Length: 109
Image 1 (tube, rainbow, N blue to C red):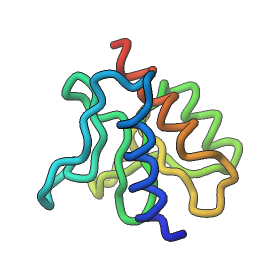
Image 2 (tube, one colour):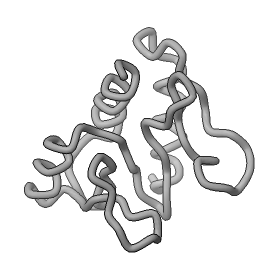
Image 3 (cartoon, rainbow, N blue to C red):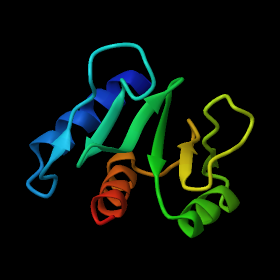
Image 4 (cartoon, helix red, strand yellow):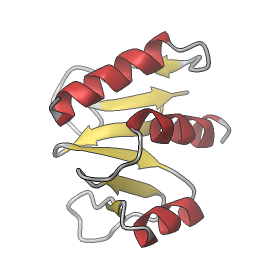
């Protein structure tokens, strides 16, 4: 399964999930956030350059990076973001679990 297909499955799963009230699907287009899942108009997960990117608390991002599961997300501005995590292609972590964790984090703000 390609990363694109995995993200499509993730979107379908979250939109069909009982615990994902208020989740908005990606918007058509090509600008920043066009491949993003939102809750209350805030992005919590997105598909960027073939990778899943999620918004999580800084300590959790620190933990994931230290564990070798990926890197801090950099929106091509040269500064990695503290609360955004890019999952490595070969990381054994489940996309759905990370996306649900991000949804819970962003949804309670």
